Image 1 (cartoon, rainbow, N blue to C red):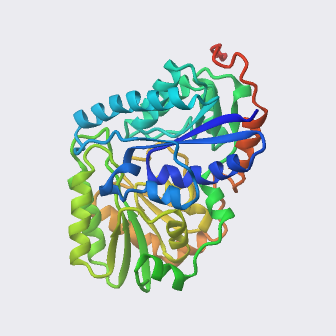
Image 2 (cartoon, one colour):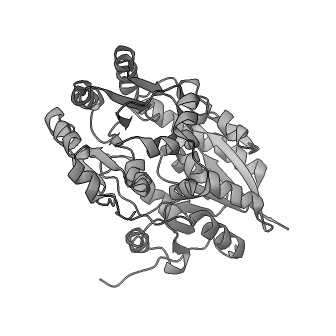
Length: 386
């Protein structure tokens, strides 16, 4: 009998990482895929991206609508509660043998709590990482402690999960899942891409993705104005803008970016590019700017530069392709000058990605196939010598 592996996804970015793992689970002779979709996937404002999942050939077993029409801390807290209720019902009906969770968003913690109370073991992906400017930092480590099997992206992160008391035999360094999407699919030509996203590339081009720093209080409006202030004086710059996640304080960023794009003919906003379009864009832009984890994890595989702004990704491992700066217009302008300089471009042509070279999803599937679930719920704390 096949082992029932349930995967949960709540955002477009998370799904882009999970897609190839889900395909490999489908292809396995020992595993059966179940799929729960929740969060921003079910939001019209964020592009109703569950349609993209279905278009990719996946059957959605359960949809759990948890989003409220607000980005306040109270609304997110209520969404968390709705997530526990809805995902508990889904797990009770699906009865998976193991639940796969990726990352650190609040809906992932909802799912982890639901699985814990339903006595369903959890395989957690991308644990041990650090994002010191976000509530996600605490959520990620909390999910680690609730989980039973861990797939991490670097050896540093593996050591950190072990430091949290997890048994070394259950912590596997498989690299970053996002690199599989780069290695395993044929990306679009520039002509195909321009038609697909209705965008004309200019002499210079950037992707902008900016999310709230959720441990700061109401800084989103100030920070995004500094970012756009640094960009608006650049002549002949094509700007592909992807909208923020459904985090607290995200609506002001959403509205500000929309207004900026309406006034700037060479820029265009997208609720969701989709993984193929996004990765294809990385071939033709000069780099990315903002505070998305993708700039640190996937973009280095294209030997393109990233301007990482502010504290959102503070503490996460980054390579030579990443330029760090504060969310201050003058500092962002200095970072932009460096990004476009021939010296910097030449320096990163042969840089390596600290998150590996792909193959993560197949490694995870092999582990899931061979994993014994006997007594896996009984966890012994792994003490380390100090």
